[in-house]
Length: 345
Ligand SMILES: [Zn+2]
Image (cartoon, rainbow, N blue to C red; front, side, top):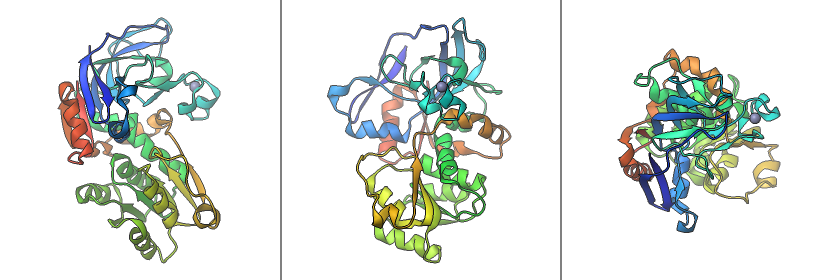
Protein backbone atom coordinates (compact mmCIF):
# COMPACT_ATOMS: atom_id res chain seq x y z
CA UNK A 1 0.00 0.00 0.00
CA UNK A 2 0.93 3.67 -0.17
CA UNK A 3 1.64 5.58 3.02
CA UNK A 4 3.25 8.81 4.19
CA UNK A 5 6.77 8.78 5.61
CA UNK A 6 8.76 11.60 7.13
CA UNK A 7 12.48 11.51 6.35
CA UNK A 8 13.44 14.58 8.35
CA UNK A 9 12.58 18.25 8.72
CA UNK A 10 10.72 19.49 5.66
CA UNK A 11 10.92 16.10 3.93
CA UNK A 12 7.63 14.17 3.71
CA UNK A 13 7.16 11.50 1.02
CA UNK A 14 4.44 9.06 -0.02
CA UNK A 15 5.86 5.62 -0.75
CA UNK A 16 5.03 1.93 -0.98
CA UNK A 17 5.10 0.12 2.36
CA UNK A 18 4.10 -3.44 3.31
CA UNK A 19 0.34 -4.06 3.40
CA UNK A 20 -0.89 -4.34 6.98
CA UNK A 21 -2.04 -7.77 8.14
CA UNK A 22 -3.83 -9.01 11.25
CA UNK A 23 -1.15 -9.94 13.80
CA UNK A 24 -3.16 -10.30 17.01
CA UNK A 25 -6.69 -11.67 17.54
CA UNK A 26 -7.62 -8.22 18.90
CA UNK A 27 -6.55 -6.41 15.69
CA UNK A 28 -8.71 -4.96 12.92
CA UNK A 29 -7.65 -3.93 9.43
CA UNK A 30 -9.07 -0.58 8.37
CA UNK A 31 -9.09 0.80 4.82
CA UNK A 32 -8.62 4.54 5.42
CA UNK A 33 -11.15 6.74 3.64
CA UNK A 34 -10.36 10.11 5.25
CA UNK A 35 -7.34 11.32 7.22
CA UNK A 36 -5.68 14.64 7.93
CA UNK A 37 -2.54 16.51 8.88
CA UNK A 38 -2.22 17.64 12.52
CA UNK A 39 -0.56 20.75 13.88
CA UNK A 40 1.54 18.37 16.00
CA UNK A 41 2.82 16.72 12.77
CA UNK A 42 4.45 20.08 12.08
CA UNK A 43 6.75 19.68 15.10
CA UNK A 44 8.81 16.85 13.46
CA UNK A 45 8.32 18.63 10.13
CA UNK A 46 10.27 21.53 11.65
CA UNK A 47 12.89 19.73 13.64
CA UNK A 48 13.23 16.00 12.93
CA UNK A 49 16.78 14.82 12.32
CA UNK A 50 17.26 12.67 9.18
CA UNK A 51 18.99 10.19 11.52
CA UNK A 52 15.56 9.44 13.06
CA UNK A 53 13.91 8.73 9.70
CA UNK A 54 12.27 7.53 7.68
CA UNK A 55 9.27 7.12 9.96
CA UNK A 56 5.56 6.68 9.33
CA UNK A 57 3.36 9.62 10.31
CA UNK A 58 -0.30 10.54 10.85
CA UNK A 59 -2.68 9.71 13.68
CA UNK A 60 -6.21 10.80 12.71
CA UNK A 61 -8.41 8.68 10.46
CA UNK A 62 -11.79 7.35 9.50
CA UNK A 63 -12.07 4.15 7.50
CA UNK A 64 -13.93 0.96 6.68
CA UNK A 65 -13.19 -2.24 8.59
CA UNK A 66 -11.85 -4.81 6.11
CA UNK A 67 -11.05 -7.67 8.44
CA UNK A 68 -11.02 -8.43 12.15
CA UNK A 69 -9.12 -10.81 14.43
CA UNK A 70 -10.96 -13.66 16.15
CA UNK A 71 -11.46 -11.78 19.43
CA UNK A 72 -12.89 -8.56 17.98
CA UNK A 73 -16.62 -8.17 18.64
CA UNK A 74 -17.50 -4.46 18.72
CA UNK A 75 -16.85 -3.77 15.04
CA UNK A 76 -17.24 -5.93 11.97
CA UNK A 77 -16.31 -5.99 8.31
CA UNK A 78 -17.92 -3.11 6.43
CA UNK A 79 -18.35 -0.80 9.45
CA UNK A 80 -17.27 2.82 9.06
CA UNK A 81 -15.16 3.68 12.09
CA UNK A 82 -13.24 6.58 13.60
CA UNK A 83 -9.92 5.97 15.37
CA UNK A 84 -8.71 8.25 18.14
CA UNK A 85 -5.07 9.33 18.05
CA UNK A 86 -4.09 6.71 20.63
CA UNK A 87 -5.20 3.07 20.68
CA UNK A 88 -6.35 1.58 23.97
CA UNK A 89 -7.96 -1.55 25.38
CA UNK A 90 -10.89 0.26 27.00
CA UNK A 91 -10.74 -2.07 29.99
CA UNK A 92 -7.68 -1.26 32.14
CA UNK A 93 -7.79 0.96 35.23
CA UNK A 94 -6.75 4.08 33.31
CA UNK A 95 -9.24 3.52 30.48
CA UNK A 96 -12.03 3.04 33.03
CA UNK A 97 -11.01 6.39 34.54
CA UNK A 98 -11.24 8.00 31.11
CA UNK A 99 -7.49 8.38 30.68
CA UNK A 100 -7.08 6.23 27.57
CA UNK A 101 -3.76 7.87 26.61
CA UNK A 102 -2.25 6.14 29.67
CA UNK A 103 -3.73 2.72 28.79
CA UNK A 104 -1.38 0.01 30.08
CA UNK A 105 -1.70 -1.90 26.79
CA UNK A 106 -2.18 1.10 24.52
CA UNK A 107 0.07 3.23 22.37
CA UNK A 108 0.28 5.76 19.59
CA UNK A 109 0.09 5.51 15.79
CA UNK A 110 3.17 5.63 13.58
CA UNK A 111 5.34 4.28 16.36
CA UNK A 112 7.51 1.15 16.00
CA UNK A 113 5.55 -1.44 13.99
CA UNK A 114 2.29 0.51 14.36
CA UNK A 115 0.92 1.98 11.12
CA UNK A 116 0.49 5.71 10.62
CA UNK A 117 -2.81 7.35 9.80
CA UNK A 118 -1.73 9.06 6.57
CA UNK A 119 -1.87 5.99 4.35
CA UNK A 120 -4.24 3.68 2.52
CA UNK A 121 -4.82 1.30 5.42
CA UNK A 122 -3.83 0.55 9.00
CA UNK A 123 -3.68 -2.39 11.37
CA UNK A 124 -5.60 -1.24 14.44
CA UNK A 125 -4.46 -2.89 17.67
CA UNK A 126 -7.06 -3.39 20.44
CA UNK A 127 -9.85 -2.69 17.94
CA UNK A 128 -12.68 -3.24 20.44
CA UNK A 129 -11.38 -0.55 22.77
CA UNK A 130 -10.12 1.81 20.10
CA UNK A 131 -12.60 2.04 17.24
CA UNK A 132 -16.01 3.69 17.33
CA UNK A 133 -18.58 2.77 14.70
CA UNK A 134 -20.10 5.73 12.86
CA UNK A 135 -23.76 5.55 11.78
CA UNK A 136 -23.16 7.32 8.44
CA UNK A 137 -21.70 6.47 5.02
CA UNK A 138 -18.07 7.12 4.07
CA UNK A 139 -19.22 9.92 1.75
CA UNK A 140 -21.42 11.70 4.33
CA UNK A 141 -21.11 15.49 4.50
CA UNK A 142 -20.48 15.01 8.24
CA UNK A 143 -17.15 13.21 7.71
CA UNK A 144 -14.88 16.26 8.27
CA UNK A 145 -16.62 17.02 11.57
CA UNK A 146 -16.58 13.35 12.59
CA UNK A 147 -12.86 13.17 11.83
CA UNK A 148 -12.17 15.93 14.36
CA UNK A 149 -13.28 13.47 17.08
CA UNK A 150 -10.07 11.60 16.34
CA UNK A 151 -7.95 14.36 17.80
CA UNK A 152 -8.50 18.10 17.43
CA UNK A 153 -12.02 18.39 18.81
CA UNK A 154 -11.29 15.90 21.59
CA UNK A 155 -8.10 17.79 22.38
CA UNK A 156 -9.80 21.18 22.51
CA UNK A 157 -12.55 19.66 24.63
CA UNK A 158 -10.03 18.03 26.96
CA UNK A 159 -8.40 21.42 27.49
CA UNK A 160 -11.73 22.93 28.48
CA UNK A 161 -12.72 19.99 30.72
CA UNK A 162 -9.37 19.92 32.53
CA UNK A 163 -9.54 23.70 32.89
CA UNK A 164 -12.92 23.38 34.64
CA UNK A 165 -14.77 25.61 32.18
CA UNK A 166 -18.40 26.22 33.12
CA UNK A 167 -21.01 29.00 32.72
CA UNK A 168 -19.40 30.99 35.57
CA UNK A 169 -15.85 30.97 34.20
CA UNK A 170 -14.19 33.42 31.88
CA UNK A 171 -11.79 31.85 29.40
CA UNK A 172 -8.75 32.82 27.35
CA UNK A 173 -7.74 30.55 24.48
CA UNK A 174 -4.15 30.93 23.28
CA UNK A 175 -3.59 29.84 19.68
CA UNK A 176 -5.72 30.10 16.56
CA UNK A 177 -4.80 26.72 15.07
CA UNK A 178 -7.43 24.00 14.77
CA UNK A 179 -7.07 22.91 18.41
CA UNK A 180 -7.32 26.48 19.71
CA UNK A 181 -10.43 27.14 17.62
CA UNK A 182 -12.03 23.91 18.82
CA UNK A 183 -11.08 24.82 22.39
CA UNK A 184 -13.23 27.92 21.81
CA UNK A 185 -16.09 25.71 20.54
CA UNK A 186 -15.62 23.45 23.56
CA UNK A 187 -15.61 26.32 26.06
CA UNK A 188 -18.82 27.57 24.46
CA UNK A 189 -20.35 24.08 24.68
CA UNK A 190 -19.53 24.03 28.39
CA UNK A 191 -21.32 27.32 28.89
CA UNK A 192 -18.62 30.00 29.03
CA UNK A 193 -19.79 33.40 27.91
CA UNK A 194 -16.62 35.47 27.83
CA UNK A 195 -14.13 33.61 25.63
CA UNK A 196 -11.09 35.65 24.58
CA UNK A 197 -9.22 34.17 21.62
CA UNK A 198 -5.58 35.17 21.25
CA UNK A 199 -4.53 34.78 17.62
CA UNK A 200 -3.11 36.81 14.77
CA UNK A 201 -4.68 35.31 11.65
CA UNK A 202 -7.93 37.06 10.94
CA UNK A 203 -9.52 34.34 8.81
CA UNK A 204 -8.92 31.96 11.71
CA UNK A 205 -10.07 34.27 14.47
CA UNK A 206 -13.19 35.00 12.39
CA UNK A 207 -13.93 31.25 12.52
CA UNK A 208 -13.18 31.45 16.25
CA UNK A 209 -15.92 34.07 16.59
CA UNK A 210 -18.29 31.72 14.74
CA UNK A 211 -17.36 29.04 17.26
CA UNK A 212 -18.15 31.33 20.20
CA UNK A 213 -15.23 33.68 20.89
CA UNK A 214 -16.55 36.93 22.39
CA UNK A 215 -13.27 38.85 21.96
CA UNK A 216 -10.16 38.51 19.83
CA UNK A 217 -6.73 39.73 20.88
CA UNK A 218 -4.20 39.81 18.06
CA UNK A 219 -1.37 41.25 20.15
CA UNK A 220 1.16 38.92 21.76
CA UNK A 221 3.55 39.08 24.68
CA UNK A 222 3.21 41.95 27.19
CA UNK A 223 0.91 43.85 24.85
CA UNK A 224 -1.40 40.86 24.46
CA UNK A 225 -1.43 40.26 28.22
CA UNK A 226 -2.34 43.92 28.85
CA UNK A 227 -5.18 43.64 26.33
CA UNK A 228 -6.68 40.57 28.01
CA UNK A 229 -6.39 42.25 31.42
CA UNK A 230 -8.15 45.31 30.01
CA UNK A 231 -11.01 43.09 28.80
CA UNK A 232 -11.37 41.48 32.24
CA UNK A 233 -11.34 44.48 34.58
CA UNK A 234 -7.63 43.98 35.19
CA UNK A 235 -8.09 40.48 36.64
CA UNK A 236 -7.40 38.02 33.84
CA UNK A 237 -9.59 34.99 33.13
CA UNK A 238 -10.46 32.06 35.40
CA UNK A 239 -9.27 29.59 32.81
CA UNK A 240 -6.56 29.72 30.14
CA UNK A 241 -6.53 27.07 27.41
CA UNK A 242 -3.05 26.92 25.86
CA UNK A 243 -3.10 25.26 22.44
CA UNK A 244 0.33 26.10 21.06
CA UNK A 245 3.09 24.39 23.03
CA UNK A 246 5.88 26.97 22.71
CA UNK A 247 7.33 28.91 25.66
CA UNK A 248 5.92 32.34 24.67
CA UNK A 249 2.42 30.82 24.78
CA UNK A 250 3.07 29.47 28.28
CA UNK A 251 4.36 32.87 29.40
CA UNK A 252 1.25 34.46 27.94
CA UNK A 253 -0.86 31.90 29.84
CA UNK A 254 0.41 32.80 33.30
CA UNK A 255 0.29 36.46 32.27
CA UNK A 256 -3.46 36.38 31.65
CA UNK A 257 -4.70 33.88 34.24
CA UNK A 258 -6.77 35.26 37.12
CA UNK A 259 -5.55 34.61 40.68
CA UNK A 260 -6.96 31.25 41.76
CA UNK A 261 -7.36 30.24 38.13
CA UNK A 262 -6.28 27.32 35.99
CA UNK A 263 -3.96 26.98 33.01
CA UNK A 264 -4.83 23.94 30.90
CA UNK A 265 -2.26 23.01 28.27
CA UNK A 266 -2.93 20.80 25.26
CA UNK A 267 -0.32 22.17 22.86
CA UNK A 268 2.49 19.59 23.01
CA UNK A 269 5.18 21.46 25.02
CA UNK A 270 8.36 21.99 23.04
CA UNK A 271 10.19 22.64 26.34
CA UNK A 272 10.89 20.76 29.57
CA UNK A 273 11.89 23.73 31.74
CA UNK A 274 9.35 26.45 32.56
CA UNK A 275 8.68 29.01 35.31
CA UNK A 276 6.54 27.79 38.23
CA UNK A 277 7.69 30.20 40.97
CA UNK A 278 6.17 33.21 42.72
CA UNK A 279 6.02 35.41 39.62
CA UNK A 280 4.32 32.81 37.44
CA UNK A 281 2.17 30.16 39.17
CA UNK A 282 2.77 30.20 42.92
CA UNK A 283 1.98 33.85 43.68
CA UNK A 284 -1.52 33.66 42.21
CA UNK A 285 -2.42 30.17 43.47
CA UNK A 286 -2.55 28.99 39.87
CA UNK A 287 -3.34 25.40 38.92
CA UNK A 288 -1.44 23.95 35.95
CA UNK A 289 -3.07 21.02 34.19
CA UNK A 290 -3.54 19.41 30.78
CA UNK A 291 -1.79 16.78 28.73
CA UNK A 292 -2.42 14.49 25.76
CA UNK A 293 -6.17 14.25 25.37
CA UNK A 294 -7.82 10.89 25.87
CA UNK A 295 -9.81 11.59 22.69
CA UNK A 296 -11.44 8.15 22.97
CA UNK A 297 -13.06 9.22 26.25
CA UNK A 298 -14.99 12.07 24.64
CA UNK A 299 -16.24 10.47 21.41
CA UNK A 300 -19.58 9.19 22.75
CA UNK A 301 -20.22 12.51 24.50
CA UNK A 302 -19.48 14.71 21.48
CA UNK A 303 -20.83 12.43 18.73
CA UNK A 304 -24.54 13.37 19.04
CA UNK A 305 -23.78 17.11 18.68
CA UNK A 306 -21.90 16.37 15.46
CA UNK A 307 -24.39 13.85 14.04
CA UNK A 308 -27.32 16.18 14.71
CA UNK A 309 -25.49 19.17 13.25
CA UNK A 310 -25.48 21.29 16.42
CA UNK A 311 -21.70 21.66 16.24
CA UNK A 312 -19.60 21.81 13.07
CA UNK A 313 -15.99 21.33 14.18
CA UNK A 314 -15.16 20.19 10.61
CA UNK A 315 -15.13 23.86 9.59
CA UNK A 316 -11.45 23.84 10.57
CA UNK A 317 -10.64 21.96 7.34
CA UNK A 318 -9.96 24.41 4.55
CA UNK A 319 -8.09 22.23 2.05
CA UNK A 320 -8.35 18.67 0.73
CA UNK A 321 -5.55 16.69 -0.91
CA UNK A 322 -5.19 13.14 -2.26
CA UNK A 323 -2.57 10.84 -0.80
CA UNK A 324 0.13 11.67 -3.33
CA UNK A 325 -0.29 15.38 -2.53
CA UNK A 326 0.24 14.98 1.22
CA UNK A 327 3.68 16.67 0.98
CA UNK A 328 1.91 19.71 -0.51
CA UNK A 329 -0.55 19.55 2.38
CA UNK A 330 2.32 19.77 4.88
CA UNK A 331 3.80 22.73 3.01
CA UNK A 332 0.43 24.49 2.97
CA UNK A 333 -0.07 24.03 6.71
CA UNK A 334 3.50 24.93 7.53
CA UNK A 335 3.27 28.18 5.56
CA UNK A 336 -0.17 28.83 7.12
CA UNK A 337 -1.84 28.88 3.71
CA UNK A 338 -4.05 26.14 5.11
CA UNK A 339 -5.49 25.85 8.61
CA UNK A 340 -5.99 22.09 8.48
CA UNK A 341 -5.63 19.71 5.54
CA UNK A 342 -8.01 16.82 4.87
CA UNK A 343 -6.57 13.76 3.09
CA UNK A 344 -8.62 11.54 0.79
CA UNK A 345 -6.47 8.44 0.17
ZN1 LIG B 1 -6.52 0.68 28.88
